[in-house]
Image 1: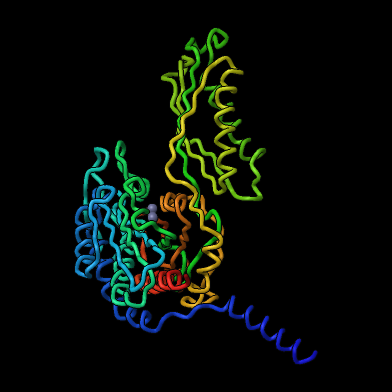
Image 2: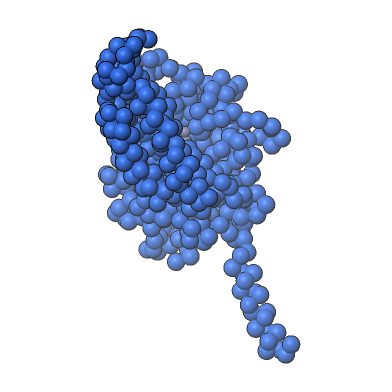
Length: 431
Ligand SMILES: [Zn+2]
Ligand SMILES: [Zn+2]
C-alpha cells in the first residue's frame, strides 16, 4: 500500500468514523440541565398533584404560560382551547423546530404511594371519577418547561427559531368537542413561522431510567374506530326461515374481517389489528332481532396497509350482509394517524441521542399498536417521537400506563431535558 493509497484509506476511515460518531452534549447545556433538575421535578410534582382532564387543563395552562412569559418568550394562550405556544428566536434566522409536550391527565384514580399523589375528583361523562396523570404527561410538561428555560438562556448560540407546543387533549377531547394536535394544526400551530421539523417524547413506565427507545417509520399505530350497523328482519326464534338473522350476519362479518388481517395483509411488513369490542343486539331468547350494532377498532402502522384494510372492510361488510339476505353499513372515525418517524430525520438526530444517553442505552424497538396524536403533526412536517425510560433500575414489573398504580421514577426526567435541548441545537445548527 503506497502513501497515497494509505492517506485515501485514512480519509475514508476518518469520514466514516465522523459520520457515525455520537455527538457530545454541549457542556453548558449539560450543567444547566443538571442545575435545573430539582426545579423540573418540583414542577412535575405540582402538575401531578393538580391533574386536569383533556380540554379542561385551565390551571395547568396558566402555570405553563406564566413560566414562558417570565422567560421573556412570545406566548400565545388558548390555542386549541387550552394549549400554550411560545416562540424563541435565536441569534440568527434559520429553520424552525417545534418541541411538543402534551399536558392532559386521565379519569383514573391514583393508587401509587407517593407523597404528591393526586386526590382530585371530577365528573366525567356523568360519572364521578378520580383524576391523575396516569400516562405521565406531567413529566412531559415539566421537561419541556425545563428545555424552554435552558434554550432561552442559550439563545445567542441558536440559529433559527424554536416553537414550544404545550398541547391539550392528547388522550382525546370529550365527546362532541374538538381538541388535541388536530385542532392545534387547524388553528395554524405549524405555521408562522413554518415548522421544519418536530420532536416529541413519551415517558415509559416499562423502560428503565437512562434508556431511550425509538423506531424509524411507523412507531405507533393509526387508530380507527368503526361502527357497523346490521339490518335483518325480525321474526320468531323458532322459525328463522321467516326472517333474516342479524346476529348470525354479525358473526359472519367478524369472521370475514379477521381474514383481512390473516389472509390479505402483508404481516411481515408491519403488524395490523382489527378488534370488534362491542356487539349489541336482541332482547330475549326466542326472538330473532331486527338489527345489530358492532363497535371496534383498527390499528395499522403502514400507510398502504391502512388503506388496504379500510378499503376491504368497506367492501366486505355490506357484501357479507347481502349474501345472507340482510344489509350492513360501516362508518369509520379516525382517532390518530400513524406515528411515523421520518427515517432521514431519525438517522440525522440519532448520534445526538446516543452521545447523551450512551449508545448502549439507545434501543431500536418494535412498533406498538397503541396510538398517539403526535402523529397528526408528523403528517404535516417530518417528526421524531421517542420513548424515555421512567422505570426504577432493578424493578422487575411496572404498572402499565392508564392504570391506578402507574408510577414514574423522576430520576429519568433529566435525560429528557438534556436530549430535547441538544436535539434542538444540533438540528438548528446543522443547517
Ligand atoms: Zn395515554
Ligand atoms: Zn400519553
